[in-house]
Every structure is written in structure tokens, then in C-alpha cells.
Image 1 (tube, rainbow, N blue to C red):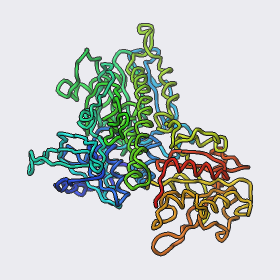
Image 2: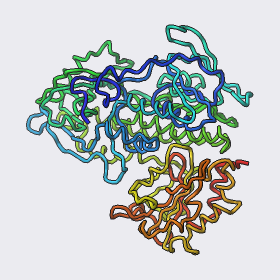
Image 3: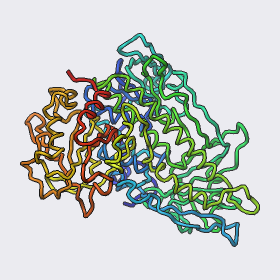
Image 4: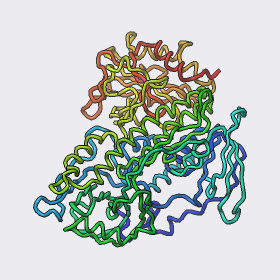
Length: 637
């Protein structure tokens, strides 16, 4: 899918005429007086949270933004494999895949061994290891991700539209108020209502308002860390060049002129350049007043020598300094007091953008928080669950800071040579890049044991589905219609838990079949978490969704033999759901083999609403199923 050939145009590239891309300015509605959740900031973290909460009709959510309209261009562009898996849960991953640039290979360049003033390619490597994810690592304008999330919000069960031109002036928490303890005061910035003040009371507030977060300051939290005093420029440009790897992600180390990272952009013509600037003095700050686009282009040409780059158009550019900072806490909780105000994204962690982790870590923050807020607000669980957000995400943020500090130091260092023996060997940089490939892909996140993550007593039953890590999808064949599909794609952003039953050697749905016995327990036993935690007026899979994967080919399974729990009647007409039974065999491979499922005994995998594996259990360990859900959910009666 090619575009931008005639120049950069923001918006949907499938719309050929620029005038048709114009969207009417947002309506200037007043803020509500009370809400369940107030989200401050329309960055990726805030929009992702609003998109999740829009799935719940009973939850009132408001999201505000200081800018006067939606984002159109610039800022983040790298979308990790794990983030794409998340987008699949919203059903817009295919759209992003079609439009985006796919990062399949990375090229490494270093000083030429014979002429040190020139650069030479040292190697090309595969960017993402095989079978790390069914999703690619892609590059796309952050604004297009915003547009997709805005559509999810717009068409959700509880429709949400952002309120723009609002600046948060004050936030206070009254812990004696059991209903709406947080009070926020906003100043309107739009010309029709300039200076007007609005007050909103909320049950919960999430600050997604960036590194200078007013929410963070209001609850007395600080960003703590340091800067390595290294300046960088970034440009999205349409170029003409003789550099041979212009359409590959390229890390370039020159001997004396600095370093550069080339990130090809979507559409086939645009590229992003990260250009190293001179080292900053102590307390020196970068700004667009001290750096020009001409100086950045000149620096790029010096680094690329003997190749040249001619910039035809600049779509967006900025300058920044590298710093790694982490907030002292991710919420306002104190000993003996539950949280009501949370921080996400840049409001609680900042780092360099070159590893492409900013947007990805930010959306994973609110991916973790969103379902937990929904559980509390819909009465599925106790408010104590919200303490797990800081517990799980603060460790991930620290790992990101540690990785980014080392990555930035290596990228900014001069290549090792006789004149710079303290420099970094380009081969060592490449090795570090490969070593942390799973981390940058977002698939290495591993939550520690808690009520939400078991200690892993039966991990060997599913060795390829690590407890505490995201469910690693692979293909299966759906029984009802013989459709080859990814099992992980059945887990949508709807707040449901998942029990996946993988059958052992027993004959399908025979009297000794442990999957059948499990279904009988879940469907009829009064101790069943499905019966205890599902409201009587709701579909039987509204809270816990049960699916089964059998080793037999799909043609050997008869529809009439399937247990009613795996073929439930749903909706006002009582229509049968035929999409819960799968064969592990698909396209000459087996899910069991690919993900280490015990073929003899089978197993049961409990997956959280955010697609992370909570537990692996034997199929007949019904007591552990009861014990797990008792620790998380509360009765619907």
C-alpha cells in the first residue's frame, strides 16, 4: 500500500482526495458533573483506557485533552508485536497491518575498515525471531493508532468522545467521600469559553497527561532519574538518496560525525531519521530555537558519507534529550488506603524513543489497568484488586528504564577504534539488539505471583504458555466451520476471563473424557465459578468464557456430541454459539507441539482479561479452579 508520493497528507491514506480527509472540529460539550472514571490526556495510554471502558454500558467515562483537537502527525511510530496482538483484541490489527511499514530486517552500518571517514554495512539481521508472535513489528504514524482507538470509543456500548481544550488546574482527593472522592477543576481553553472553570467529581482518575503531569504533581508523586546529556533530532521526511538501505531499519555508527537511526515509514517513501547532536553541557536544554532543520539535514549527510540524502519535504520534526525517569509510585495509595488516582504512560516513566517503547509501554499500562477498573465498577471484584496495577506495572517500567539506559549509552557511543578504545564495538551493539529482541517486541513481560498469577505448580503441563506472561497464540482449526485461525484471537477486549481446556488422550466426550467431566462441573455444580459469578440475567459466558481444544481432527468430532457448555444458547433468541470447540491440528502442525501442551494428560489454562496466563492446572483439579476465582471475583448474587 503506497502513499505520500505527492507529499505528506495526514489522515486515512485510503482516502485519495485530501479534502475528503478533513473531519469536522470536535463539538464543545460541557463536562459532566460526576463520572465513574476521569481520564486526563488523549495520548495512546488515555485513549486505550477509554476504548476498553467504552465496552461497558454501565460505566460512565470522561476523557479530556489540553490540545484543541485530535493528533494528526508525529510523535511515536513503532508498534511492537505484543501491541499488535492487543489491537487484534479490538479488531483493528488487520487495518494497521495493511497500512503500516513492516520491520522485517535491520541493517547495521559502521566505519569502513579501509576509509574510516566512510560508512560500510556490517550486516543485516532478521528483526523479530521466528514464532515470537503471529503479529509483525510495524511502523505507523501514532495519529493513525489514535484514530482507530477513537473509533472503538465512538461505537462502544458506552459511546465516548474526548473533551478537548481543557487544562487541569486542580485535583483533590477526599477519602471520606465513599462515592466520588476525587474533585477535578478544569479551565477551558477554547475561544468561545476561554477562562471558564468546570468542576467534575469522579470515583477514579487516571493521569495520562505526559511527563509534566499535573495529576502526578497533585498526588505528590515525582519523576526520579537522570539525563545522559545527549541531544537527538528526529525528522519524518520525504527524501531522494543513494543510501542502499533506506527502506530498512538501519543503525549507523560513523567514526567522527555521530550516529543515526533510520526508520522507514509507511507508504513506501517517507522515512524517520534519528540524528545524534552534540553532547549537551550540564543543565543545558534543547529546543527548536537552538536547532534548525537545515542543521539536522547537514548532520545526517555527514553521518551517511559517502552517501547523500536530499530532503524534499519535512512532515514533522522535533528535538529531545535522553533521560530515564521513573515515578515514585503509580497511584495515590498509602498504607491502609486504597488507590483512587492512577498514573500511566509518560506520567510515570520517561526514556529515549529510539527503542520504540514509549507508546507500547504506555498502552500496556492501561491495558493492565482497564479491565481491573471495569471489574471493580461493575461489581465483579473488590476494590483491593486495583492495588495490583502498581505492583505489576512498576516493575515493568523499571526494566524498561534499565534497558533503555544501556541501549542509549551504546547507541550514542563512538565506535571502538585505536583512537577511541573506550568506544562500543558495533558487533557488541548488534548482539545487545538481538539479545533484547523479545523485550522490545513486548513479549518478555512477566508478572510476578499474586492472586492474579499462580506460583506455577503445574507449569510443565503447558511448557510453552508461561504463567505470568501473555498467552502465546498459535493456529487451530475451528470445528463448526473448519476455519484455520489463531486461538489467541478469540480473546477480545471485553473484560472476560478465559478457561481453555486442552484434552488429553481420552476419547472425545466419552464418559472418561476429562473435558466432559470439567464441563459437567462448570455447568451444574453449585461450586462452579461460572454459576457463582455470572449474573442470572447474563449469558453463561459473560464473565468466564470456556473453550476446548481437542487433538482429534475436526472432521472426527460430531456437533451432537459437544457438551452444552461448549455450545451455549445466548442472547434474547437463545441462539447457539458454535465457536468454542477447536482441533489442535491446523496446516500440518499441532497447537500441542508448538506450545508444549501435555498430549497424554491435557491441561487447563486460565487466561486473564488482558490475555496473560494466570494459571495452568490439571483438567480434573476442580478445587484449584474454585480457589483461584474465589481469590479474584465476588458473587453476583
